[in-house]
Image (cartoon, rainbow, N blue to C red; front, side, top):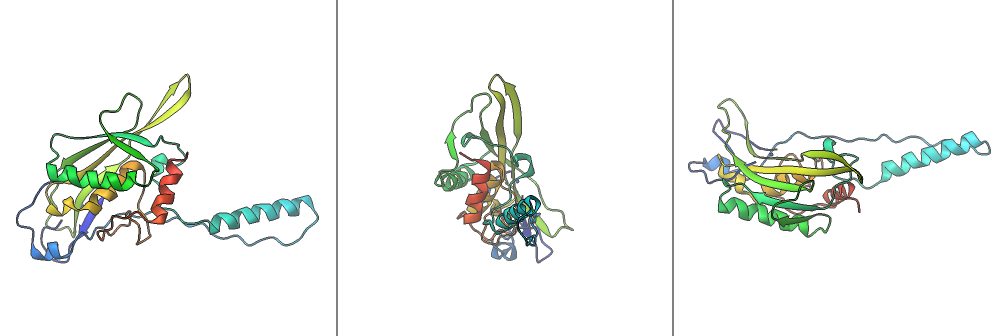
Amino acid sequence: MLVLLALVVAVMAVKDGWGPLAGVSKQVTAMGNAVERQVHRQFQPDTPSDAGQASPQKVTDLRASSSRRAAHKAKPHTPVEPVVAGLKLKKTYHYRFTATMPPAGRQTFKRAIRIYNRTGIVHLVPGLAKHGKNRITFGTYRKQVGHNQTSVELGRGGPGITQTVSIHGIVVHNHAKASLNTEYALAYGDSIAVHELGHALGLDHSMNRHSVMYPLDQGKVKLSHADIRGLKRIYRS
């Protein structure tokens, strides 16, 4: 979800929707796409190594300690949504737009789709998904900020995981959604579409300022190395 911070007592413009907005204040427009989101902080404490040798127990302790240190030194990745953690999703998605999606919104999401497709980690194609396959629905909604609020919602997005049992075992598929808030013109920003599509694919919020999933959106549309590693954790080959 994207939320634009307000510095003045005025209606401002951030997981579903699109649409032009007349009368957005100059102060709001000047803020760009500053967005606030909740963040998950992941921290793994380091573990001091054991010294010693000879005994089997000491060897086991050393190996365990080494494993913990290696995990701590591993390259950071953008967190994944809890609902997809530990699952293995297929990389191919079929996507469609709802009837309420205006042309400008379609184009913005299509640009976001190209960004993710270029990674080679996921493959998003237009059309209706067959039963049991991954799909993404791009839509719109309208939500206006209250007078006493200091932030504005520009979009929404997230995965919808379903697991079915077949003769081949448990099959996992994602019926995801990504939408823009048509109440505000700032929802048309490419960075909003990239962020909400990231949620739909399973990425969570990140503490990394270079990530497109960072709580404060600053117009970033290029996936960081941590974002790429986060996607790879979900779509392992």
